[in-house]
Length: 481
Image 1 (cartoon, rainbow, N blue to C red):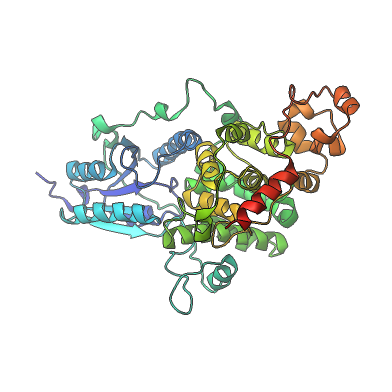
Image 2 (cartoon, one colour):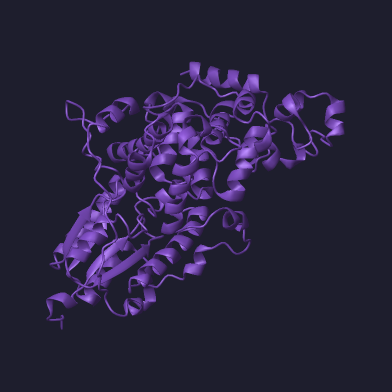
């Protein structure tokens, strides 16, 4: 029989891409009910509304869940981690605990919203209150509207309208929470073996472990370190690929170990309000615009937003794609970036633009194949940001660089890796080269290559494509539209 006491029926907090305790509106609301809280995470590999997590994301999820468990334990609670179809699992949990309510944050893609609506409808038939909040963006995506009531398709216009709104202050961790007893014993057949999230045969995550520490506390430490040491020169430093000029907050944002409102409030309160802080706020705004665009244009992850590109004749070269993935293109700045990605699960933003342009323009390979690789290898893989950025660099989106804007990787390297430190770090077989020979070894005299121990085609590959010819091929394909 159902428990008779009002306070014995738990309030379920369903954690998803919001693995933190501070500034968690759903958790805060659940705590205010006075009921014991039951905190749960469900990994749904069978019926996800979007594609399953990539390998690097699964590695990060393991660490994020461990830290969330530790944080909850510090407040006297626990996290129930389950695996199975979301609807069936949540309904079973609500039934076995006789839950009074369930609290979660709004998801943005129409498939996610449809799944949540189905679950909410099923819960309501059992007289379970469903409470939904904005917890992953600065503002609900319906907030920023054009004068005609539509949505913005250009970032500049969106950003101008967005700045007319006030961003809510972040919430503190609720105090005095009581928790549902013995939560870890519920639904034992659905428990997730979290060790299965980690790679084993082979264990390719050594570089990730060396580079990153997931967790809410670590996210806050990154933010404070950025404000203290990098924000003042962020406007220029963010483009220098060999330097620590960025915040490196993206994976923590992707998993919700820090909220965009926490970052916003910190920059507003502690920033110098100079060019660096304004530029960084605009980058948080770009993330917001990506989420906003995904909400209003759910076709964005799989279809060109500019329909004319549906007729573009992409090349289908698995050989070139594999060389790009492995950092064996023969173009040093591209190879350095792709190797950084494979070893650390992250890539500098300027480098992402360079390798994206090289794949979609010089190699003329569909941006969706690049997005797929990034989604599997990035620890900060984010459905909205990934596809927005790939469509931007490919020129196929509504807010995009023109297709005829083809990044010259050599010039990009000379401008943003002037001393060649980034290339030497990630392409050590070229570390004895200097100057133009480092950026374009295929044009270097044989004696310089010999002294550096470089043999093109043996110790380092020749370029997959002549840069000028690749550019002309891309422009010809564009003109054919």
